[in-house]
Image (cartoon, rainbow, N blue to C red; front, side, top):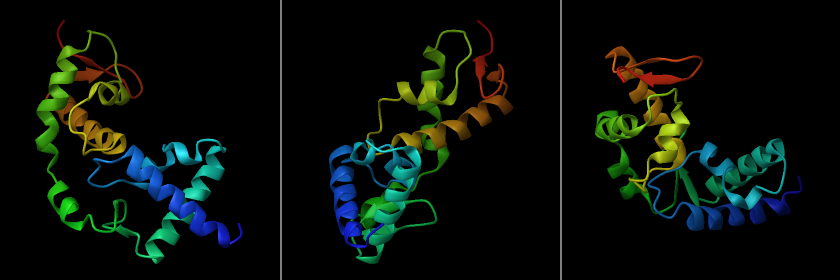
Amino acid sequence: MPSHNNDYFAQALIESIKLELPNASYFTREDLLHLSVFAHVTTITRYRYVCVAVRYAIERKWMMEMNRTDLILTGGKRVYANAIVNIDEYESTVAKIVNKLPHEPFGVMTVVSQWTTDPHLTPNAKRTYTRGILNRMLVRQYIEPAGAFMYIRRGG
């Protein structure tokens, strides 16, 4: 990929982040793969564009890596520090969603798609929290396995 495209890709990605994730405290590369800016190309090309754009944006200090997965736009460091949470903070939200689901098998993304609160969390962050919370709910026997990557509430 010609290096003159790096600036174009990075700027396009940053504009898309500002438009599509305006309330996100942080985001991951996974979140960036789902933005509309590169949706017109195949998945592998989209992955390559995101990698190039992120690397270029970090080199130019337009974006910062907060840890091995979390990224922020420069200037968001204070917001990110406030975004670090314990999984316990969202357990009641996930439990409420699970309680409202019909008594039939559901997956992680079923819960995520119904999670309408907490706009500062990206869908990927909600997916990560949901997966961890559902595992806790399995251990506590509030839900039980219902096939590969599927769960069902206990009782009826």
